[in-house]
Amino acid sequence: MKTACITGATSGFGQACAELFAENGWNLILCGRREERLQKLKAQLDGVNVHTAVCDVRDRKQVERMVADLPESFAVIDLLVNNAGLALGMELAQEADLEDWEVMVDTNIKGLLYVTRTILPAMAAARHGHIINIGSVAGSWPYPGGNAYGATKAFVEQFTNNLRCDLHGTGVRVSNVEPGLAESEFSVVRFHGNQEKADAVYKGTEPLTPVDIAEIVFWIAARPSRVNINRVEVMPVCQSWSPFAIHRRC
Image 1 (cartoon, rainbow, N blue to C red):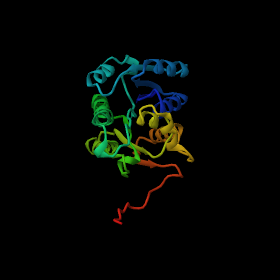
Image 2: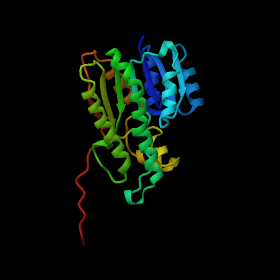
Image 3: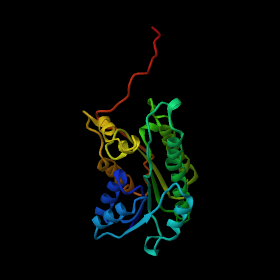
Image 4: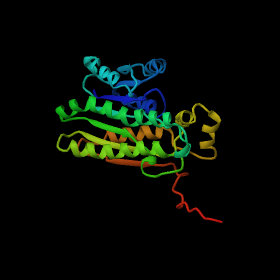
């Protein structure tokens, strides 16, 4: 029986991944900051072997303790889904809140580094495993207000590519999934709980759903061990690219 460790499992893409992998018989290590939500999800996945871990990926010691304290039946991790991440604010760089930037860097970059570095040695030693990082189209395509968030997701893309180089010959696979407009708690968090602003992001659109992303993650994980999906960029049909911005003086 394979085991997947999913960070940020209490909502959105992480929760959808947990539900889909559970349906397909995987053992699950579910990591998140909200214990009540973790326990609710565990109860929902009744009949599947689930280990929950309350852990803030921004805290290196918590991450190391989470992995060290895994029960023996969950100690061998076949798949790590680095899903924990967030965006905060859409102010222009010259107006942005530095605390928002720090939280994004600590979560999207440092958190991903801590979890990956803690779990990866065992995968490399066993010459088996798979890491799927959840990036974003914002890592490739800039937009006003994307500043630090887009930069953190560009880091995820480049870190994924470099992991592939470092793990060459080990049999460990590494992939990056880069969603575009997707409706979840993402925008509520981005606008610090302002539901009206969050709803406006999706008004008149048909965005991606967490299930859409979970199905892509599962498809990548289910490929034969000889196949590595390097990168998947996915947008809803309603989203594409804008013309270059040109400022004209009147």
